[in-house]
Length: 263
Length: 249
Image 1: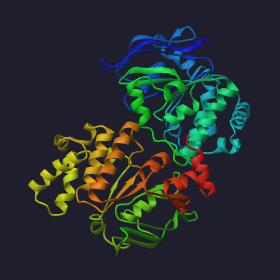
Image 2: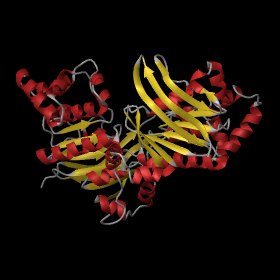
Image 3: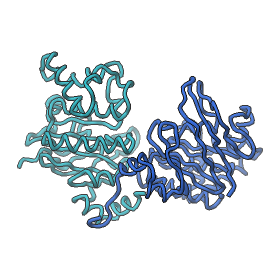
């Protein structure tokens, strides 16, 4: 299988202090890759490095991040902006917070789509309603007419995930997309992302500290600690039979339901 | 044995301008015996935290009675209650004053309780050690420590006046699993040592199953199910509980 996104010996520094050390991994076409690790392990920084979102003081000090023959850290701002959305899309932990509170959800999504392609508002409404229906939202028209505060936190997060799909990107980078949700909504968000892959063949990188989410979604897993990869491989293999001591400690700390007597 | 906590027909109604009233807690009753660890689980908005906030008088109940250690405290002063019950919150960094050291925060309740300053300082060092932090953490500010360390300090603060009941409102939800496991082990150890009861509010059902003696499931302001963790999780009676357990990944 072809690698769609390839991190090749990437090191990232903030103000000269290295935080990511020599990290290499690939995202294959149609694959869901989970990146797990504790707070501060550098997992979100990897996504930010790909999207040019490291912020002041942050640089990819060494290595390349390849996407379709282009090295992302080398791209000019405008070129990266054009890729962001139709090619690489990102979902954040609080998708609701990325929306402006005084404009409707529909108006804001229209603006985002319009920044990449010329489309009339009525065409956009049709397109957005179709997408939301495919992703099993019950009342697409109402969602588009709502203000962000009309919708619950869980619903806003689901809308945020759906919105990333409006431009049909080939890669979805999801940074803790379910961490602010409680279990029932978390399950819906996970099912939505699995459905996205099924319908659109989108490749997904999901960064999370929630091992259950990774177990439910990922084909392969990368385990990070202190800016380095500790272990990587087939998701089931790494989660059920971790080879490294650190991964074993991490897995042992995950609370598990005892569903059967004596289990 | 006198229950450490008795909740009878507790109710909280929030009035919203121009809209119909919202019943956040609807006729909730339960007891806790000394030393018990009771888990309160349910989704966001089910009313778990509102119950906790009424027990510590951060909110006034709209109806019902609350008794602590055999004494009716429904209308009592916060100061009278805080000697018996203490609370640990979800975001440790936000529960300390950012301009004061952790030692000041922990020592404040001792000074308020009338302990001399020198004695309070020694006690703060001892408390920090009991939660696995070295005494020099007393001079650090909340932003200078990690989330897990700050939560340990928050537990030390809650233990300072040796409460009979500790309320943990999502106290480990913001922490990594490894740190969460450490904090839960610390809480078990401290409960055994002090004979303290714990009301453990949590939306992580697997964590509650492993840690608590008994579980209450809340949904839309009501308690819909109650039992030992294995009863509730292995043979749930209510559709809502089944759905909740089914959602765990």
